[in-house]
Amino acid sequence: MSHARCIHVTAGLCRPNRLRKLLRLPTFVLFIAAIATQGLAAQINLVTGSGPVASVIKWAGKSAISVIPGAALFPTTSKTTALYLGFTAGTRADINNMVLYQTDTRSPAITSVTKITLNGVSNPSVDLTDPKVCPDQPVSATAPCLIRLDLLALQLTTSSDSYLVIYFTAPDSNNDALGLAKPAFGISSLTGWLEFTDQTRHVVGESLNTLINSGRALGLTAVMNQ
Image (cartoon, rainbow, N blue to C red; front, top):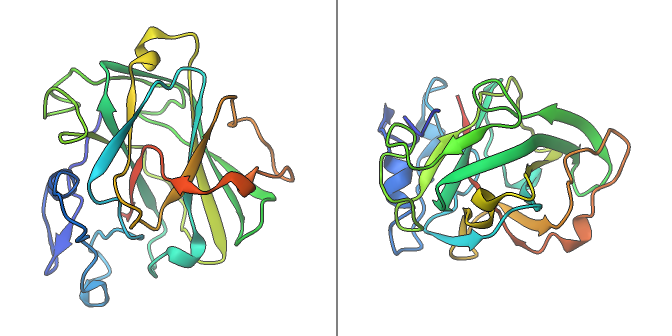
């Protein structure tokens, strides 16, 4: 499994594990600064990140939905996108399916569906007790485990909203104890909600239940170019 290797840029230098440290800071200060001065090869967060995180527990049979609003994106010419998940409790995450829906900005109608994978599969099982996967043990809200999902050959644009949806297997005792990161404060561009059914099977033309998008992102901690 892959964890966050290089997730913050300052003065053009890529600094490993900075995002993990920032998620622990008891502060409202986020790490988006001087993006206009970054080189095109620099890796940057494309949205205002999550900052310190809290934990939402018990995910068996639930869909975690995180929204990346197009209007909140910082401009980028990158043709690829990296999504990072944060886990805050439990020993193993048993994922049933992951997708990324896109809609026109502020529209619920799905215009595209992209399969999301980790190590090539859309239904991975993540061992949160493995120090190679989660270096800081035990996993908690103050020491979240950050996982980079497989790189997407996709450019996020301001004209589209994106919805990362992850459905967790049920019945499943691992997922009953599983915790996902959500922003501790309402300062992130990322929003979201949860549903008690599998929401990863929608197709183009169907509509998402965006009227209940009033919460904070669930699991998604960063959206990076690559």
